[in-house]
Length: 147
Image (cartoon, rainbow, N blue to C red):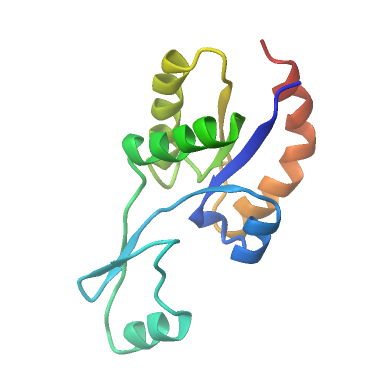
């Protein structure tokens, strides 16, 4: 049985402590407000975010591109020698699912002994996070037995 890591993206709204405790991989979708771009690794404090919005600033968001997804996946493959099960933000709301899918295809050619499975959550926000938790049980069996 291969070791595998579950990854998701920041739209899952999972708390950082939960992500760390369960060793989840995280693909950061960035957001920009007042000409500054923030990410999972470098977030804007929540109070400041809402203060900016109350002052009339509007945030914009950006999907992850295939290169960013590949970097997250490849780091896991190389550092943890693990397969990957990625649960992505809804394809109906973002291109991030497709970016992760393209990255998985590319890396599957480079690492043919590794499995990288990308699931379209068809959910957003905490719904995606809850789906990450609930779907894992049903997906693990298929993941471990897929050839």
